[in-house]
Length: 352
Ligand SMILES: NC(=O)c1ccc[n+]([C@@H]2O[C@H](COP(=O)([O-])OP(=O)(O)OC[C@H]3O[C@@H](n4cnc5c(N)ncnc54)[C@H](OP(=O)(O)O)[C@@H]3O)[C@@H](O)[C@H]2O)c1
Image (tube, rainbow, N blue to C red; front, side, top):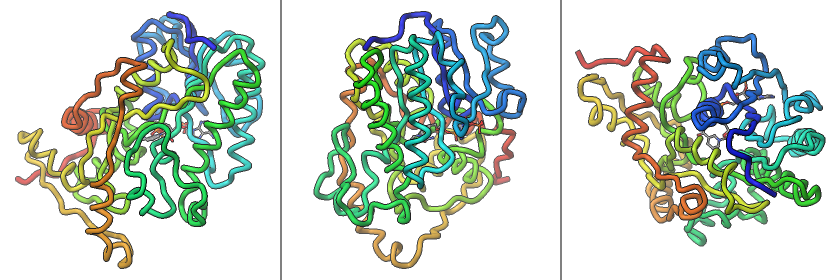
Protein backbone atom coordinates (compact mmCIF):
# COMPACT_ATOMS: atom_id res chain seq x y z
CA UNK A 1 0.00 0.00 0.00
CA UNK A 2 3.03 2.21 0.24
CA UNK A 3 6.59 2.49 -0.97
CA UNK A 4 9.33 1.81 1.53
CA UNK A 5 10.52 4.83 3.53
CA UNK A 6 13.92 6.30 2.65
CA UNK A 7 16.59 4.77 4.87
CA UNK A 8 14.21 1.97 5.91
CA UNK A 9 15.00 -1.72 6.29
CA UNK A 10 14.80 -4.17 3.41
CA UNK A 11 15.16 -7.96 3.56
CA UNK A 12 16.74 -9.47 0.42
CA UNK A 13 16.34 -13.17 -0.34
CA UNK A 14 18.90 -14.75 -2.66
CA UNK A 15 21.45 -12.19 -1.45
CA UNK A 16 24.48 -14.31 -2.38
CA UNK A 17 23.20 -14.50 -5.96
CA UNK A 18 24.27 -12.53 -9.03
CA UNK A 19 21.30 -10.13 -8.98
CA UNK A 20 20.60 -10.29 -5.22
CA UNK A 21 24.18 -9.27 -4.44
CA UNK A 22 23.78 -6.14 -6.55
CA UNK A 23 20.39 -5.36 -4.97
CA UNK A 24 22.11 -5.47 -1.56
CA UNK A 25 24.88 -3.13 -2.76
CA UNK A 26 22.49 -0.65 -4.41
CA UNK A 27 20.26 -0.51 -1.32
CA UNK A 28 23.28 0.19 0.89
CA UNK A 29 24.50 2.84 -1.57
CA UNK A 30 21.12 4.56 -1.26
CA UNK A 31 21.20 4.59 2.53
CA UNK A 32 18.93 1.65 3.38
CA UNK A 33 19.43 -0.96 6.08
CA UNK A 34 19.65 -4.43 4.61
CA UNK A 35 18.96 -7.90 5.97
CA UNK A 36 20.64 -10.27 3.56
CA UNK A 37 19.03 -13.72 3.59
CA UNK A 38 21.45 -16.54 2.78
CA UNK A 39 21.32 -20.27 3.32
CA UNK A 40 24.57 -20.41 5.24
CA UNK A 41 26.17 -17.20 6.42
CA UNK A 42 29.27 -19.13 7.53
CA UNK A 43 29.90 -20.24 3.96
CA UNK A 44 32.26 -17.39 3.17
CA UNK A 45 32.86 -18.66 -0.36
CA UNK A 46 29.37 -17.34 -1.07
CA UNK A 47 28.83 -14.71 1.62
CA UNK A 48 32.37 -13.26 1.88
CA UNK A 49 31.68 -10.50 -0.64
CA UNK A 50 28.67 -9.37 1.42
CA UNK A 51 30.78 -9.31 4.58
CA UNK A 52 33.35 -7.19 2.72
CA UNK A 53 30.77 -4.47 1.99
CA UNK A 54 31.32 -1.32 4.10
CA UNK A 55 27.75 -1.49 5.42
CA UNK A 56 28.53 -4.82 7.05
CA UNK A 57 31.33 -3.28 9.09
CA UNK A 58 28.99 -0.63 10.49
CA UNK A 59 26.09 -3.04 11.07
CA UNK A 60 23.78 -1.48 8.44
CA UNK A 61 24.01 -4.80 6.58
CA UNK A 62 23.31 -7.97 8.53
CA UNK A 63 23.34 -11.59 7.34
CA UNK A 64 20.61 -14.09 8.27
CA UNK A 65 20.32 -17.80 7.67
CA UNK A 66 17.11 -18.73 5.85
CA UNK A 67 16.40 -21.80 3.75
CA UNK A 68 13.19 -21.46 1.76
CA UNK A 69 12.50 -25.09 2.38
CA UNK A 70 12.02 -24.37 6.10
CA UNK A 71 8.65 -22.87 6.96
CA UNK A 72 8.80 -19.81 9.19
CA UNK A 73 12.44 -19.09 8.35
CA UNK A 74 11.59 -15.46 7.58
CA UNK A 75 9.42 -14.69 10.65
CA UNK A 76 12.16 -13.00 12.64
CA UNK A 77 13.96 -11.55 9.62
CA UNK A 78 10.93 -9.72 8.19
CA UNK A 79 9.74 -8.41 11.58
CA UNK A 80 10.45 -4.67 11.59
CA UNK A 81 11.45 -4.51 7.91
CA UNK A 82 9.45 -2.27 5.54
CA UNK A 83 10.51 -3.90 2.29
CA UNK A 84 11.22 -7.38 0.96
CA UNK A 85 13.06 -8.04 -2.29
CA UNK A 86 12.40 -11.71 -2.97
CA UNK A 87 15.01 -12.78 -5.49
CA UNK A 88 15.83 -16.27 -4.34
CA UNK A 89 15.39 -19.28 -6.55
CA UNK A 90 13.30 -22.16 -5.19
CA UNK A 91 14.56 -25.73 -5.06
CA UNK A 92 12.13 -27.10 -7.69
CA UNK A 93 10.18 -25.05 -10.23
CA UNK A 94 8.65 -28.15 -11.80
CA UNK A 95 6.52 -28.97 -8.75
CA UNK A 96 3.71 -26.39 -8.73
CA UNK A 97 2.39 -27.46 -5.31
CA UNK A 98 5.84 -27.04 -3.80
CA UNK A 99 6.17 -23.57 -5.39
CA UNK A 100 2.80 -22.57 -3.86
CA UNK A 101 3.80 -23.91 -0.44
CA UNK A 102 7.02 -21.89 -0.47
CA UNK A 103 5.10 -18.74 -1.48
CA UNK A 104 2.54 -19.38 1.27
CA UNK A 105 5.08 -19.53 4.06
CA UNK A 106 6.96 -16.44 2.84
CA UNK A 107 3.60 -14.63 2.63
CA UNK A 108 2.75 -15.78 6.17
CA UNK A 109 6.00 -14.20 7.41
CA UNK A 110 5.16 -10.95 5.58
CA UNK A 111 1.70 -10.91 7.19
CA UNK A 112 3.10 -11.65 10.64
CA UNK A 113 5.70 -8.88 10.36
CA UNK A 114 3.11 -6.09 10.75
CA UNK A 115 5.75 -3.84 9.23
CA UNK A 116 6.29 -4.77 5.57
CA UNK A 117 4.76 -2.25 3.12
CA UNK A 118 5.99 -3.71 -0.14
CA UNK A 119 7.34 -6.95 -1.56
CA UNK A 120 9.09 -7.03 -4.93
CA UNK A 121 8.83 -10.55 -6.33
CA UNK A 122 11.45 -11.49 -8.89
CA UNK A 123 9.98 -13.32 -11.85
CA UNK A 124 11.54 -13.55 -15.32
CA UNK A 125 10.93 -12.72 -18.95
CA UNK A 126 10.22 -16.45 -19.20
CA UNK A 127 6.84 -15.53 -17.68
CA UNK A 128 6.30 -13.23 -20.70
CA UNK A 129 7.78 -15.19 -23.63
CA UNK A 130 8.12 -18.88 -22.80
CA UNK A 131 5.61 -20.33 -25.28
CA UNK A 132 4.63 -24.00 -25.64
CA UNK A 133 4.11 -23.24 -29.33
CA UNK A 134 6.69 -20.74 -30.57
CA UNK A 135 4.34 -19.59 -33.34
CA UNK A 136 2.40 -17.81 -30.62
CA UNK A 137 5.24 -15.25 -30.82
CA UNK A 138 4.27 -14.63 -34.45
CA UNK A 139 0.67 -14.04 -33.45
CA UNK A 140 1.62 -11.82 -30.48
CA UNK A 141 5.11 -10.43 -31.15
CA UNK A 142 4.99 -7.37 -28.88
CA UNK A 143 6.79 -8.33 -25.66
CA UNK A 144 5.44 -6.18 -22.83
CA UNK A 145 4.03 -6.54 -19.32
CA UNK A 146 0.48 -7.63 -20.20
CA UNK A 147 1.70 -10.42 -22.43
CA UNK A 148 1.56 -13.89 -20.87
CA UNK A 149 2.49 -17.19 -22.47
CA UNK A 150 -0.52 -18.96 -23.95
CA UNK A 151 -1.83 -20.94 -20.97
CA UNK A 152 -4.08 -23.06 -23.20
CA UNK A 153 -1.19 -24.58 -25.11
CA UNK A 154 -1.09 -28.32 -24.32
CA UNK A 155 2.71 -28.11 -24.73
CA UNK A 156 3.10 -25.64 -21.87
CA UNK A 157 3.98 -28.19 -19.21
CA UNK A 158 6.81 -28.70 -16.74
CA UNK A 159 7.67 -31.95 -18.53
CA UNK A 160 8.36 -29.93 -21.69
CA UNK A 161 10.62 -27.48 -19.90
CA UNK A 162 8.13 -24.76 -18.93
CA UNK A 163 8.14 -25.39 -15.17
CA UNK A 164 10.25 -22.29 -14.50
CA UNK A 165 7.90 -19.95 -16.38
CA UNK A 166 4.82 -21.59 -14.86
CA UNK A 167 6.31 -21.39 -11.35
CA UNK A 168 7.10 -17.70 -11.80
CA UNK A 169 3.49 -16.89 -12.76
CA UNK A 170 2.23 -18.92 -9.77
CA UNK A 171 4.47 -16.90 -7.43
CA UNK A 172 3.45 -13.58 -8.95
CA UNK A 173 -0.24 -14.36 -8.49
CA UNK A 174 0.17 -15.87 -5.02
CA UNK A 175 1.84 -12.71 -3.70
CA UNK A 176 -0.55 -10.31 -5.45
CA UNK A 177 -3.65 -12.19 -4.22
CA UNK A 178 -2.31 -12.41 -0.66
CA UNK A 179 -1.44 -8.71 -0.61
CA UNK A 180 -4.91 -7.78 -1.90
CA UNK A 181 -6.51 -9.94 0.79
CA UNK A 182 -4.34 -8.52 3.57
CA UNK A 183 -4.64 -4.88 2.48
CA UNK A 184 -1.57 -3.70 4.40
CA UNK A 185 1.16 -4.34 1.85
CA UNK A 186 1.53 -4.64 -1.89
CA UNK A 187 3.34 -7.05 -4.19
CA UNK A 188 5.04 -5.81 -7.36
CA UNK A 189 6.63 -8.26 -9.77
CA UNK A 190 9.89 -7.60 -11.59
CA UNK A 191 10.58 -9.67 -14.71
CA UNK A 192 14.31 -9.47 -15.46
CA UNK A 193 15.72 -10.35 -18.85
CA UNK A 194 19.10 -12.01 -19.47
CA UNK A 195 21.47 -10.51 -16.89
CA UNK A 196 24.93 -9.56 -18.07
CA UNK A 197 27.46 -7.52 -16.11
CA UNK A 198 30.07 -7.77 -13.40
CA UNK A 199 30.17 -10.57 -10.86
CA UNK A 200 31.01 -9.56 -7.30
CA UNK A 201 32.14 -12.95 -6.00
CA UNK A 202 34.07 -15.78 -7.61
CA UNK A 203 31.28 -18.34 -7.04
CA UNK A 204 28.93 -16.29 -9.25
CA UNK A 205 30.92 -17.13 -12.39
CA UNK A 206 29.35 -20.59 -12.32
CA UNK A 207 25.78 -19.29 -12.07
CA UNK A 208 23.79 -17.26 -14.48
CA UNK A 209 23.50 -18.72 -17.08
CA UNK A 210 24.69 -15.68 -19.01
CA UNK A 211 27.91 -14.82 -17.16
CA UNK A 212 28.76 -18.52 -17.11
CA UNK A 213 28.37 -18.72 -20.89
CA UNK A 214 30.69 -15.70 -21.26
CA UNK A 215 33.16 -17.52 -19.01
CA UNK A 216 32.93 -20.43 -21.46
CA UNK A 217 33.70 -18.08 -24.35
CA UNK A 218 36.81 -16.85 -22.52
CA UNK A 219 38.15 -20.34 -21.89
CA UNK A 220 37.36 -21.65 -25.35
CA UNK A 221 33.91 -23.20 -25.67
CA UNK A 222 30.34 -22.09 -25.76
CA UNK A 223 27.11 -23.61 -27.01
CA UNK A 224 24.29 -22.17 -29.06
CA UNK A 225 21.56 -20.94 -26.66
CA UNK A 226 17.79 -20.96 -26.32
CA UNK A 227 16.55 -22.29 -29.67
CA UNK A 228 18.53 -19.52 -31.44
CA UNK A 229 16.85 -16.83 -29.36
CA UNK A 230 19.06 -13.75 -29.26
CA UNK A 231 20.08 -12.64 -25.79
CA UNK A 232 17.52 -10.13 -24.55
CA UNK A 233 19.52 -8.29 -22.01
CA UNK A 234 19.72 -6.12 -18.94
CA UNK A 235 22.83 -5.10 -17.06
CA UNK A 236 22.77 -6.73 -13.63
CA UNK A 237 23.39 -3.34 -11.99
CA UNK A 238 20.44 -1.82 -13.84
CA UNK A 239 18.32 -4.82 -12.88
CA UNK A 240 19.20 -4.16 -9.24
CA UNK A 241 18.28 -0.50 -9.69
CA UNK A 242 14.92 -1.58 -11.14
CA UNK A 243 14.27 -3.68 -8.01
CA UNK A 244 15.15 -0.76 -5.73
CA UNK A 245 13.11 1.61 -7.89
CA UNK A 246 10.05 -0.62 -7.63
CA UNK A 247 10.41 -0.73 -3.84
CA UNK A 248 10.53 3.08 -3.81
CA UNK A 249 8.04 3.99 -6.51
CA UNK A 250 4.85 5.87 -5.66
CA UNK A 251 3.39 5.05 -9.07
CA UNK A 252 3.05 1.28 -8.88
CA UNK A 253 0.04 -0.72 -7.72
CA UNK A 254 -0.39 -4.16 -6.18
CA UNK A 255 -0.35 -6.96 -8.76
CA UNK A 256 1.48 -5.02 -11.47
CA UNK A 257 4.56 -6.40 -13.12
CA UNK A 258 7.45 -4.67 -14.82
CA UNK A 259 9.99 -6.00 -17.30
CA UNK A 260 13.61 -5.09 -16.57
CA UNK A 261 15.40 -5.02 -19.91
CA UNK A 262 17.22 -2.49 -22.00
CA UNK A 263 15.66 -3.93 -25.20
CA UNK A 264 19.20 -4.56 -26.50
CA UNK A 265 19.40 -7.97 -28.15
CA UNK A 266 22.38 -9.86 -29.58
CA UNK A 267 22.93 -13.34 -31.00
CA UNK A 268 25.24 -15.52 -28.93
CA UNK A 269 27.92 -15.56 -31.67
CA UNK A 270 27.90 -11.75 -31.69
CA UNK A 271 28.23 -11.65 -27.89
CA UNK A 272 31.43 -13.68 -28.29
CA UNK A 273 32.71 -11.51 -31.14
CA UNK A 274 32.06 -8.41 -28.98
CA UNK A 275 34.84 -9.44 -26.60
CA UNK A 276 37.59 -8.75 -29.17
CA UNK A 277 35.86 -5.61 -30.42
CA UNK A 278 35.51 -4.16 -26.91
CA UNK A 279 38.76 -5.45 -25.42
CA UNK A 280 41.31 -5.86 -28.26
CA UNK A 281 44.13 -5.70 -25.70
CA UNK A 282 42.98 -9.04 -24.31
CA UNK A 283 43.86 -10.79 -27.62
CA UNK A 284 41.01 -13.20 -26.96
CA UNK A 285 41.25 -16.42 -28.93
CA UNK A 286 37.56 -16.45 -29.83
CA UNK A 287 36.18 -19.99 -30.18
CA UNK A 288 33.44 -21.00 -32.59
CA UNK A 289 29.96 -21.67 -31.29
CA UNK A 290 28.89 -25.31 -31.03
CA UNK A 291 25.34 -26.31 -31.86
CA UNK A 292 24.12 -29.11 -29.59
CA UNK A 293 20.47 -28.87 -30.55
CA UNK A 294 18.77 -31.98 -31.91
CA UNK A 295 18.52 -32.22 -35.71
CA UNK A 296 14.81 -31.34 -35.69
CA UNK A 297 15.65 -27.98 -34.05
CA UNK A 298 18.68 -27.40 -36.28
CA UNK A 299 16.48 -27.91 -39.33
CA UNK A 300 14.32 -24.98 -38.18
CA UNK A 301 17.19 -22.58 -37.47
CA UNK A 302 16.30 -19.97 -40.12
CA UNK A 303 12.61 -20.08 -39.21
CA UNK A 304 13.30 -19.75 -35.46
CA UNK A 305 15.74 -16.87 -35.97
CA UNK A 306 13.11 -15.08 -38.09
CA UNK A 307 10.47 -15.53 -35.37
CA UNK A 308 12.75 -13.99 -32.76
CA UNK A 309 13.76 -11.20 -35.12
CA UNK A 310 10.07 -10.34 -35.51
CA UNK A 311 9.61 -9.75 -31.77
CA UNK A 312 9.37 -6.22 -30.44
CA UNK A 313 10.75 -5.59 -26.95
CA UNK A 314 9.17 -2.76 -24.93
CA UNK A 315 10.28 -1.15 -21.69
CA UNK A 316 8.30 2.09 -21.38
CA UNK A 317 6.60 1.02 -18.18
CA UNK A 318 9.65 0.34 -16.01
CA UNK A 319 11.28 3.52 -17.28
CA UNK A 320 8.18 5.53 -16.39
CA UNK A 321 7.86 4.29 -12.81
CA UNK A 322 11.56 4.09 -11.86
CA UNK A 323 13.28 6.64 -14.13
CA UNK A 324 15.88 3.97 -15.00
CA UNK A 325 18.28 4.65 -17.88
CA UNK A 326 19.65 1.35 -19.13
CA UNK A 327 23.33 0.79 -19.94
CA UNK A 328 24.38 -0.51 -23.34
CA UNK A 329 25.05 -4.22 -23.72
CA UNK A 330 28.63 -3.37 -24.76
CA UNK A 331 29.25 -1.91 -21.32
CA UNK A 332 27.73 -4.98 -19.65
CA UNK A 333 29.85 -7.41 -21.69
CA UNK A 334 33.05 -5.44 -21.09
CA UNK A 335 32.47 -5.27 -17.33
CA UNK A 336 31.41 -8.91 -17.17
CA UNK A 337 34.61 -10.04 -18.90
CA UNK A 338 36.84 -7.88 -16.71
CA UNK A 339 35.15 -9.11 -13.53
CA UNK A 340 35.41 -12.75 -14.64
CA UNK A 341 39.16 -12.26 -15.00
CA UNK A 342 39.74 -10.23 -11.83
CA UNK A 343 37.09 -11.55 -9.42
CA UNK A 344 36.47 -14.95 -11.01
CA UNK A 345 40.15 -15.64 -11.71
CA UNK A 346 39.25 -16.92 -15.17
CA UNK A 347 42.24 -17.38 -17.48
CA UNK A 348 41.12 -16.09 -20.87
CA UNK A 349 42.51 -18.04 -23.84
CA UNK A 350 44.77 -15.73 -25.89
CA UNK A 351 45.77 -15.84 -29.55
CA UNK A 352 49.49 -15.62 -28.79
N1 LIG B 1 20.22 -14.31 -13.95
C1 LIG B 1 19.29 -14.01 -14.85
O1 LIG B 1 19.62 -13.71 -16.01
C2 LIG B 1 17.83 -14.00 -14.48
C3 LIG B 1 16.90 -13.68 -15.48
C4 LIG B 1 15.56 -13.64 -15.15
C5 LIG B 1 15.14 -13.88 -13.86
N2 LIG B 1 16.05 -14.20 -12.91
C6 LIG B 1 15.57 -14.44 -11.55
O2 LIG B 1 16.28 -13.61 -10.66
C7 LIG B 1 16.46 -14.26 -9.41
C8 LIG B 1 17.92 -14.24 -9.05
O3 LIG B 1 18.65 -14.85 -10.09
P1 LIG B 1 20.24 -14.95 -10.02
O4 LIG B 1 20.72 -15.17 -11.40
O5 LIG B 1 20.77 -13.82 -9.23
O6 LIG B 1 20.40 -16.30 -9.21
P2 LIG B 1 21.70 -16.99 -8.65
O7 LIG B 1 22.90 -16.17 -8.87
O8 LIG B 1 21.69 -18.39 -9.16
O9 LIG B 1 21.39 -17.01 -7.08
C9 LIG B 1 20.29 -17.73 -6.60
C10 LIG B 1 20.09 -17.44 -5.16
O10 LIG B 1 18.97 -18.22 -4.70
C11 LIG B 1 19.34 -18.78 -3.46
N3 LIG B 1 18.60 -20.02 -3.21
C12 LIG B 1 18.43 -21.07 -4.02
N4 LIG B 1 17.68 -21.99 -3.44
C13 LIG B 1 17.40 -21.53 -2.19
C14 LIG B 1 16.68 -22.04 -1.08
N5 LIG B 1 16.10 -23.24 -1.09
N6 LIG B 1 16.60 -21.27 0.05
C15 LIG B 1 17.19 -20.06 0.11
N7 LIG B 1 17.89 -19.54 -0.92
C16 LIG B 1 17.98 -20.27 -2.06
C17 LIG B 1 20.84 -19.02 -3.55
O11 LIG B 1 21.33 -19.07 -2.24
P3 LIG B 1 22.63 -19.92 -1.84
O12 LIG B 1 23.77 -18.96 -1.89
O13 LIG B 1 22.37 -20.37 -0.46
O14 LIG B 1 22.79 -21.03 -2.83
C18 LIG B 1 21.29 -17.78 -4.31
O15 LIG B 1 21.52 -16.70 -3.43
C19 LIG B 1 15.87 -15.65 -9.56
O16 LIG B 1 14.58 -15.64 -9.01
C20 LIG B 1 15.81 -15.85 -11.07
O17 LIG B 1 14.77 -16.71 -11.44
C21 LIG B 1 17.40 -14.28 -13.19
